[in-house]
Every structure is written in structure tokens, then in C-alpha cells.
Amino acid sequence: MNESAHILVVDDQQEICDVVQEYLTGEGYRVSTAHDGGGMRRALSQAPIDLVILDLMLPGEDGLTLARSLRSESGIGIIILTGRGETVDRIIGLEMGADDYLPKPFHLRELLARVKSVLRRVQNRAEESPHPGRTRAHFAGWNLDISSRELTSPGGEEVRLTTGEFDLLTAFVNNANQVLSRDRLLDLARNREAGPFDRTIDVQVGRLRRKLEDDPQNPSLIKTVRGSGYIFTPSVELS
Image 1 (cartoon, helix red, strand yellow):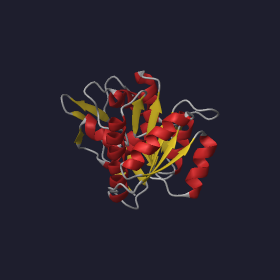
Image 2 (cartoon, helix red, strand yellow):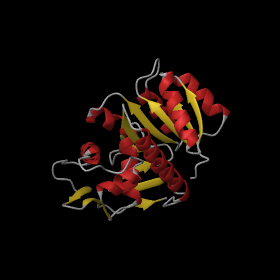
Image 3 (tube, one colour):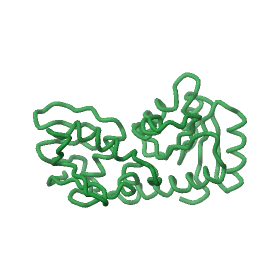
Image 4 (cartoon, one colour):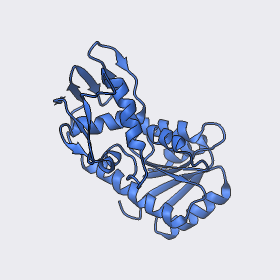
């Protein structure tokens, strides 16, 4: 995706909107701004948006709620901006469907690098569908409806998944019996590339294991490959 991409900045601080808009416009992007969820939705209804830079702390609906809503409706790129730096907040943001997370204060050049990275991945997701037209996955008695985002257990019970858990499970079923590194899983599951101390993927795998495995401490479906990452071991039937 080239520099003509349209970016929407959603932040209740006018100064941040102005600075980011001026900088990214200077880099060749089209940039719009909004200050709350209502303004975001109006902007989305008026023109196609490729990426939303979304503040976590907003009046009314917060950024996490808006990120979850955006992700349920589209594959649009999402970068969350926040004054919080705690790992748990970042994990929650990624589970809600954000592609990346940048704490305030931030350097504009770092924001630009994140914007370029997320836009590339949004384009790759649109161009590279591993199994086009296939919306259901069956494995080890489980049924995953990819179009409706519903997971049903072997006993017929619906199991609720967060956006992050759904994206991670979809990455696994589309790449079954392949060793996937943390970096690759983060990329496949819409999240940013792993940093040197990033354990986000391990947390999400642990949560997914607790929902899928009979014995999460001795997993049979999602196995750890020491020094390499994870492998999804069951046979998967896609339809």
C-alpha cells in the first residue's frame, strides 16, 4: 500500500491530531482526524479509510471498545495510542484486534515506521488469503466458523473467543502442522512483529490452550517447539 493511503487519527487532544496530521501529510498520506467514537464513525462513513490511529483514553466509548467494533466490521489497520505502558493494557488492545500499540509520548518517526508496517500487513492480508472461499474449519471434534467467528466444542457447546484468540486460532488452522515462530504468529494474527522481550503471543497461546485443551499444562493440540515457536498438531478439514 503506497503513500496515498488514507489514515484517520482519533484522539481527543487537538494538538496531537494536528501534529500527527501535519507530519503524516508531509510524508504523502491523506490524513483525517476525529476526537471521539462518533467522529470516527462519521469519518468512516464519508470516505474509505485504510488505517485508524486510535487513542485509548477517549470521552464516551474508549479506544478498546472502538477497536473491537472496528475489527468486527472490517480488516482495517488499527494502531492504538495510549499514555499507558503496562503490558496488560497492550495485550488487551491486541486481543481486541489492534495491529499495533504505541505508548505516549512517541517519536513521529517511530509512528511512521509502525504506520508503514501495518499498512503493508493490511495489504498482504487482502492479497494473500490462504484458503479463499473456505469459511469452516474442523479439527479434533472442534468446529470453527470463520465467517461468523464462532467456535463449537466437540460436545456442541459454543466457546467464546476474544478477537485476539480468534485471530490466533485462525492462523493455526490455516497453517496446521507447521512450526510457526512467535514473530510469524504475531504477524498472521494481525499483531505487530515481536520485540526482544515481547511475550504477548505466549499469553494468548496460554489462554487459547485453556479453552481448547483437556489438560492445558500438557497440551496435545498446540505444542511448544523449544527454541522455534508453536505447532498446531491436529488434522484440519477446511470447507
